[in-house]
Length: 181
Ligand SMILES: [Fe+2]
Ligand SMILES: [Fe+2]
Image (tube, rainbow, N blue to C red; front, side, top):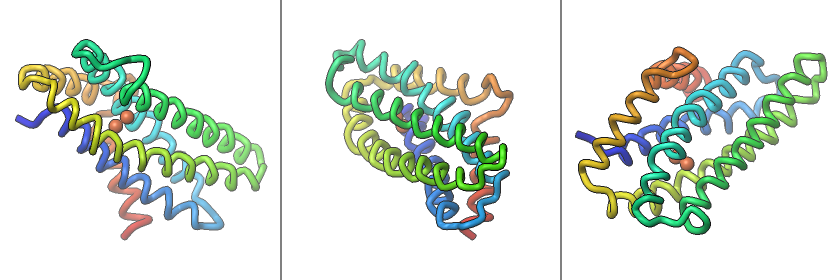
């Protein structure tokens, strides 16, 4: 059975694929509005709604129980990164609304927020993969990893949006097929 940290690293692979799409789309002068909205949706509902929820509500509290600080150190840094990411998403959403009201320059601000997000998330994912998850693997027992994995499965299959992790991966597949053929 795979570990909970492997599950999160698999999410990272999907998030990094989406990041590559965002880096490609921000090079285009006439963005497809539907695709921009789809990207924002996958970030909000999958990267934040599922993945960051699994980290913030399940993995990190367990690590704090096992002695990690929740006031300084790697867990705090990760939480801070998640908050920064949400500010970039807010910027994307606000500028999407402006674009819909006819502000044709707003897409530049969507791009700025998207590129801020991609830079942040690439460094965030590297820190989790290389440091935090490796520390987690040292302190979590097999039973704890399995328990987390079961909790994760609930989040992945019973979302508020009615879509599962596989549905979001299919959306990333579609976007990748269009922008990174
Ligand atoms: Fe994270
Ligand atoms: Fe993560």
